[in-house]
Structures are given as C-alpha cells and as structure tokens.
Image (cartoon, rainbow, N blue to C red):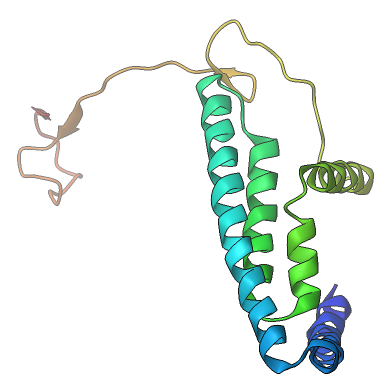
Length: 168
C-alpha cells in the first residue's frame, strides 16, 4: 500500500505536467487554463447537485432505521471527486468526473465489498428484525438511576461508614 501511494505521488504530477504541455501546445495557454477553471466550476455544480441528492437519500434511510451504507460510500466518492476536480490538471479532472457517474460508483462499491468480504476483514450477516430493542443480541433495558453519595461529598473517606444521601 505504501508503494502505491509513493508511486501515485510521483506519477500523477508527472502525468499532469505532460498532459498540460500537450494540451497547451494544441490549444494555447489561456484556453488550457480556461478549461482547468471550467472543470473546477462544473465539478462544484455536480458536487452540489449529487451531494444534496445523496444526503437526502441518507436521511430517508435513517428515517427507515437503515444504515445508509450506499449513501455513505457515494458521499465518500463524491468528496473525492470534488477534491480531484478542484486539483488543477486534466488527469485528476478525468478521474473526478468519472466518480460522478452513479453506475461507476455502484460497480466500485460491489468490487470493494467483494474484496473486503473475500479478504476476511468484513463479515456480512443478513439483517435480522429483532422483536425488541437489542444490541449485539443482548436485550437493552432502559431505566433511571439516583446517584448516592456520602454526607461529606464525593471526596469523603470511604472507609468510614455513614448514612448515604440521595442526590439528583
């Protein structure tokens, strides 16, 4: 994993510079810079639209008492897409724009889920509908309590017996 990050830190800027030079030679300096700014503006608009849509779907999932796994993954992809589109360069813009495609995000989600399950890092169990409130199979009992402290306060010597008092 460390090698991959190091490779990307070296390869991506080199690729960006090469593409900048090639595009700049074809269309000129100012149109090239204009395209970079345009992709940042388009990315911001797409991020706002799809981000709000994803947020609304997440709220609907939570209202239905479902954890919004798909929406969280989409949100992470959109956040990454926005960061890539704000980074100057055509390579990062291309990858960022691809992350805005819902079908590609769904394919990435499936591949990542299969990889995590196959690696044994994540165990997927079918969702159960419990009869009562439970947490990890244990019944949750809600209740109230009163804290009982000695007359002398919380720093009192606990070795001396004394009548407890009730605080609320």
